[in-house]
Length: 352
Ligand code: NAI
Ligand code: MG
Image 1 (cartoon, helix red, strand yellow):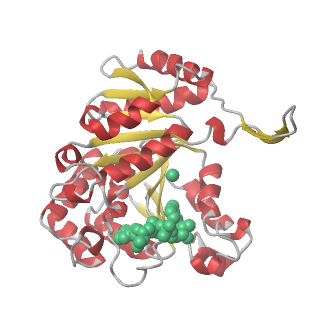
Image 2 (cartoon, protein in one colour):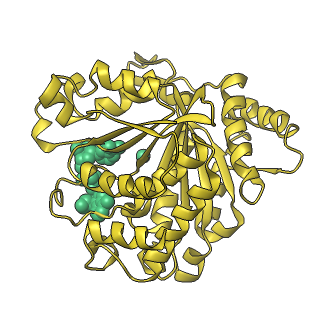
């Protein structure tokens, strides 16, 4: 089992350090760790935010754990050399087509949610967003219409094979959860969505124990805040997923708690290749002060073990340890507490 670890910039190294301690505590036999540079630190050392060695290391691994990239000092650089380009480069080169973001409320932290506590308490869903197709990657351009006005356009398209592969990710994930998939589209108006819906129905036949339901995206946005408990796995395209996944994050609360996985097309010996990272950035405002919440990164590690290494029970143990830590009131400043990054790591290790 090979894990490539890319700590990155700002608070990246601080939060990744705690995930690394958690990983060490599991003493997994046959595990090899590799460490590489991405982002501003890579630019400084190698002249590029995604050096060839780093990319090679990611390709040779079963999974990648990434901290965060970004550094205000790099704001003046040309776009290709900006730290954020490393993420886009990794997504493209590693064919990461499925973004998974769990949104789950944690006990006693409901007050951080944008929702009423009773509703916030009930959230436990997984948003599965297609990452490589849709209107973001369609042909785009500008024209003039008959009256000489400027027109901007972007082509929205999905082919059935793209929908099929994201559908399998969603149904597979649902099997390990409450066995419900909610496919979100706009099939009442969009042809793209009709192809999406037909393909979802076709894939569902392979999963007789999972139920499939459909919802239009406008209604889904409403249900996500009205009755999120009704949602288990929500699968949708790139555009709708971009919006709904951020909305789901706000339903939970602090950015320091939100983990993510980006799964690729490649199968590993133990599961699916993927890149795992907290959804937050490098937080330059608090970097180097021991204030960062490492929970999102530790929870991203749990997802890595589950999806790429097939270690479900270890993943669940880590998630339980983080939940108990939060429940015990060992909280960083973003959650209203005073614990340091390392103290949260200590508390998670103690419970593990
Ligand atoms: P950010 O997520 O880094 O920070 C937003 C706010 O949340 C800040 O106040 C920060 O202190 C706080 N925060 C973030 N993570 C936290 C944690 N683990 N614990 C406690 N507080 C936390 O977003 P921002 O400020 O917009 O971007 C900073 C840099 O990060 C930029 O260079 C940006 O491009 C980059 N970025 C990188 C991402 C990535 O690596 N995937 C994602 C988002 C931004
Ligand atoms: Mg977004």
